[in-house]
Length: 367
Image (cartoon, rainbow, N blue to C red; front, side, top):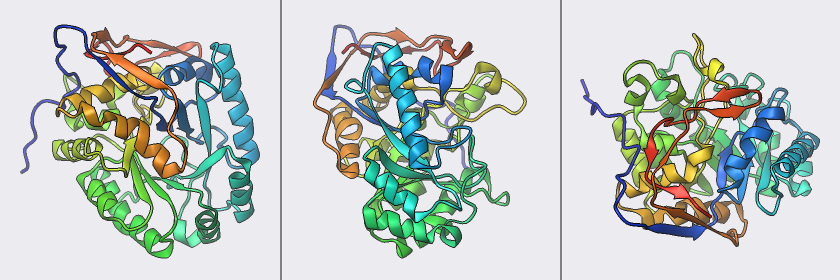
């Protein structure tokens, strides 16, 4: 039997005496859930105060299926920013479409021509929150759409897990590589693909070795915690996400990739707000809310291996390079001052529990 360390990871770097600052080009979040309505208005400022742009996930109810849907959702995000005293100059939402078995190639052309849609999201049906309308068989049903995406250069953003109930939950990313990613890359070698929220050593090895335009986002929680965090002192639903936290060897592989400086790896929080009651029940929702302290969490991860000097590449440079966008003109500064993560945050008339609630982080965003 393979043993694991008893600790869940390295969530907090020690706070050193004396002031210290870290300044980098304003980062972007290449995987973000903002939800809609009152929830959107409560959470959007948490991301906007740190990030210049974010790829916005389309798994609303109903999902963002068309360019018209994406434009309307973008309008609601802009209105929510205004309600917080912010604007698109502070934070630019980059929209996505939700891929289904019935998405039409003409919709891909409209999306590309819109200038506001920057990717198409593959959710294998049933893989995660609000994924019931997702794709049942990518290469059986979506070849015409994939042809058009490859032709116009619109990236495919994949939730990289199979949903076969015969496959162990902890193996679903590795099996996805063999069953979906390899055939996909063989059929569409020029298609831009982002393997989102990478969680395994196998995933890291695949992204490093894959030919063609392949990249991956990595979350702060997968860098900081292994699966023991789910059970530390009891069942901890606010550490439950999909893809689920993995063994310590996978966390270390992710940390090595993120801090390597390699251009294929970049920041994507996968921050996902859920009401406290929806997490703390007998069938709790998957998703960790990290937006409020995202950059402090990433700084802790990079500092844990002495690679703070490589945070800017991961957070600010690699993502724009892959998506063909300019690096943000502004800067972001963090200071080494302890900040305690609040126990709860407001969420659309309810409350949510952020990841690492009650813990003291060594870094805080100051500008």
